[in-house]
Image (cartoon, rainbow, N blue to C red):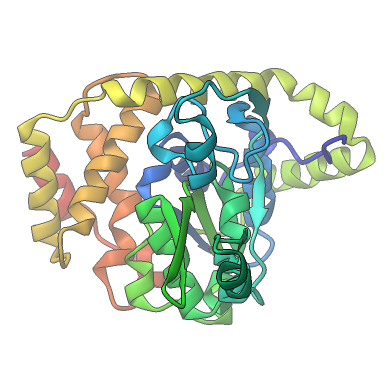
Length: 340
């Protein structure tokens, strides 16, 4: 089946913070997701869908409903353990994709369902996979996440943090891997998101429309050119797309080698204390983000500049009860800690 053409990621003008945050979460899915806040018509959905085209295909176990990684036995589903704990699984390369979760989705649709009657009648677990099964090792995209039921958002964030989805009904449970890059988008004009949920996102960016006249005109030009002939437009950007693919692949391989000095760890803690950030989640996320930035930029030791960039992505939405004031934040105190 031929893949539907999407607007190239590298052809999107501006919105650098959004693009950086998305790439960081792809390189390191364990970051815990990114929330993109912004007015309508700012290419939020376009950018998320375009991201999938940059992702390298990944090896999967043939026939697995959760497209398990044959080289990561610790994250196999129960079925793959039963079949291949003592055998070599057949593998195939499958492209990564964007799994979209509709605002109307129920918890059962998200996590999947257990057939209790079949369990009682036949003595075996019968599990019908949900959206989290489709999202495993893919990108899970939730548009208008602020309109999603709070309990469903909790389930998503728990799965993103734990990397596993567990369904329990009437004393019967079923678990499967659920490692995905969570991306939520929202227009603040349509309602806020609970601060408790906001804090669970690793990164948050606030975007607006392009204000530069020349760049804004170029946005129109590229969009019209793409709509007129998507195939020719994509071919024009193929080289830039390939460069970005290689950069992401290199960063994924480099990430496990990245190290952090005690000086950087203490600096991260001091930043959080200085800003009055509650809890320790922010500190840990700050370091993980800085490590991922280092990998994307091609070096193996976290620098002060990596930490400075990470702070601007990982902390603003945790600092205020009204998180949409992000652009008014004064970063002078953060810079003083880093530059001391």
